[in-house]
Length: 241
Image (cartoon, rainbow, N blue to C red):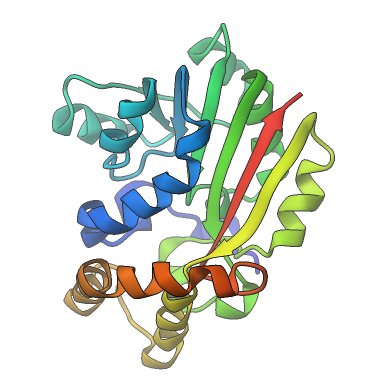
């Protein structure tokens, strides 16, 4: 499911404002990666910037985004944390940001916004030191693609086989690829019926707050039953050779 270049969006227009305060969801997601977070940590596509508060606990953190406004906003919110503007499709820009390489690259809901996602992944792998890790979360399942995806500027939703195929062409060992958050996937599908007109509407933000406060425990408890075939996201962990 591909969007035309003219519809691609950046920065704050790609997410609902309530997601920046979805602390239970963010903690659950970062916990998927915690075993592999250490040393120099590079978060790509910081968006609202809130993941930095969790990621910085694990190592020497740097957050980057190609959107200047997102970087400026993050610097105001978190003045003691390092952020920089960088386009991950430009290998020379990444090399300048991390000349000595990094131990972990974290990409949370970024690749779905990039038409040439394979080039982006290759560039990210190139800045990871041997033994370091590429940690990815992306929206799952093409069948769930709906108006919310279009409003967010998503080029696609993923299945596990697409990420496996891309990463098999990279110098990495694939440690884990699975679906996550089956209950959230049902909620996302329901929005294909209601057909929201705004990603940042009161209704969508209330939905996010309700899910984060009340539904996360249920989703976490049933997640092991669905990881092999159904979920709102795909989690991928790969180790650099």
